[in-house]
Length: 140
Image (cartoon, rainbow, N blue to C red; front, side, top):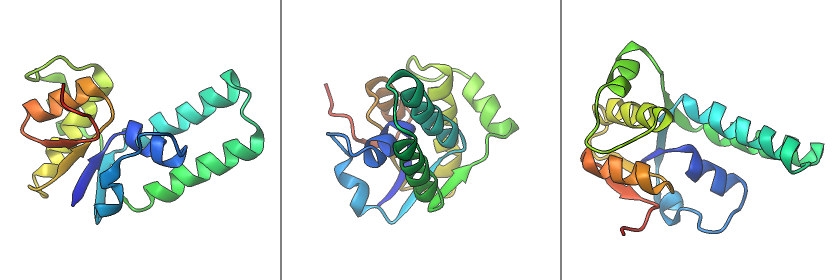
């Protein structure tokens, strides 16, 4: 299985949170937007400030994110991705989700069997509406 992964999936894996993606271990390849690095590292920094996360944990979690991302094919947020993200989608999505969807669509051009992995219900609906098989979000 080849997955497009948003930050919600990687964060649950790295933080060992409940509800981690079952399909993670079945995947042989991972794609995401370059955006995932910023989103994940900002989340760790926010936890450092708001939850007084100790320096040791900050270092471990940042390291785990960066280690995982070394195995990813990261889609560049180039002009084509930005233009697609600015265009309408079949369902409502915010800016960052639109960038993830546009990146996934770019990746699907080379990997037609790409599966979209997210724990975000709205993003999952939008991904399904653009023709992706979606894992990580139960259907309502």
